[in-house]
Image (cartoon, rainbow, N blue to C red; front, side, top):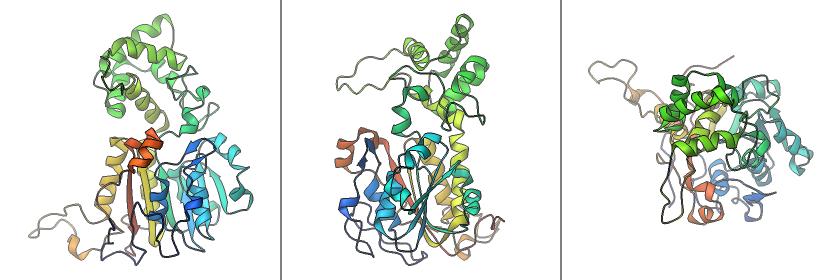
Length: 362
């Protein structure tokens, strides 16, 4: 189904989220939209390209560079420039051998995407035409046991996205070994929505007296002991440690704060007509993106018409328009190819020529 743009949007090719063949410049080239590259799957890649519709001479930001799947696909669609941002040193080391990096079509910037405005300014860029974010942990990080993100294999309980040598934040082991019971329970409940957070926190505080937590399996086995699951008939059991590991990872890396800063920066950076495409994987992330876009597209109530608290929304142009207010789900084909895609949600927005909500940042 083709989704028409809002009348207030800057003219832009019609966005059809699952169309890989028709855009203003001739459409994404099927041969280049290979979601599976070097063992890493780029979630909802055709939909991302359909949303960004890269054109010649445009500038794009891939705020979660990872293995470079989105950046490479963007660079292959047009004669454009892509800046890939990542806080993980491994991502930058791996990027050096990518042909689009060698050719200068992609430049990588080391840092957090929440700081994209400052990072791009250092590179001489003040405005861009498209921004994409693939939130959460990458499959590349999950596959490296030594990074401590996964409970499937044993490794140090680390979880820092900027690497085990980071001096910016403590590892997950520091949290579980030093924080008070209530603090640990609050983290597990707030960031993992873990209903048994108090039981898990109590067990952690009790067990760490005898032996501090050092490895992922050590913590995962404790949680398995606390949360006993009955096997499902369809075999699709979720590991009991899933929510707790998610919570610790989000807290350690300040992922939700990073997302909020990244959205604010995107509003500042995008040119009129610029496109933003964000893929989230759980409700906490998606809620932040949804609320931000609803507010910035004029969907937030602004007081009564008899006594408005600010300028009436009808008279104020919003900084974003939404091709569709609903999140876009991955295709059935992709979900069968890549199970991780099943929980993905894509939200797309287009920058209007309205002033930034908080004014331009110097």
